[in-house]
Length: 308
Ligand code: HMG
Ligand code: MG
Image (cartoon, rainbow, N blue to C red; front, side, top):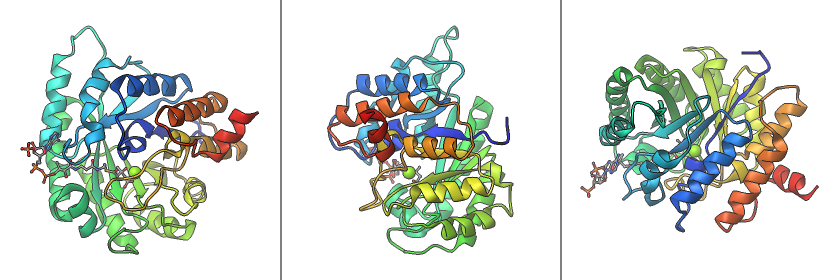
């Protein structure tokens, strides 16, 4: 991979939609995934095998991943919070005929840097959250699944406020030991500034190089893009973002969307990085999905491009 290539992980179909209260049909989600792939995006999150009692919007994930057209050059990841989720995924994968490509070969695991957020998001302590991750990894590896880790609340916690960067580094270490090929450092509530993310990344790079990590920034206070650029400047080469700036975690009150893919791609291209993404096409998809779910387009870059 070229040194100036930045991989975009498109999270709109999962992080982007999980907080939406209205019914979004599986057909719309399948269409979104198809359009995402048409922009040149090669890694995306297709959904989550989480409890429908906790996150109703993701209940249709099995149907979505079964119905979506699978491009063998694209990685479709799904979020798995516990063994129950992995077992459902395993059953689904076993039901796919051997002649067709499996809908997913990658799972995303998550633990937060704070006790309160783990409790709110997954009903367990930090230690239990990490134990669950380990247990899932052990079972998922022989299934041939790639493992991607998330550290939530790396840039701040909705319940505990500022977070000690060292705590984030400690979790990164555990996720690396569990076998994750990449760890995404998440500013779940979008409270961080570049200095905060720099301190966090400096702790994490004690355990792996910067290009092992991904930036997952929410944009609550408008600092998402500058945080992403700071992390890329420091050597991060993977960025999680969401078309139209859709998103928000149900257990992060007041937090708004993920940083929008359109502004990330615009800024990266202008700064001399490559993403392989057609920005004009991406802007149209962001505009389309926003309209489809009845929201104004949350991407200023997207609005500017569509208005041209
Ligand atoms: P719990 O209530 O402690 O678990 O939740 P439980 O085992 O008692 O199960 C409760 C019910 O859910 C039971 O149903 C289970 O069968 C069912 P009942 O017996 O009452 O009918 N259940 C499941 N159903 C389907 N799939 C499953 C599953 N597990 C249990 N996998 C649990 C614990 C972890 C399940 C729950 O807390 C949960 O699902 N949490 C996920 C929350 C979530 O999805 N949050 C958003 C994603 S994370 C995020 O957005 C952050 C990220 O973007 C990075 C960042 O920005 O920070 C990744
Ligand atoms: Mg998120």
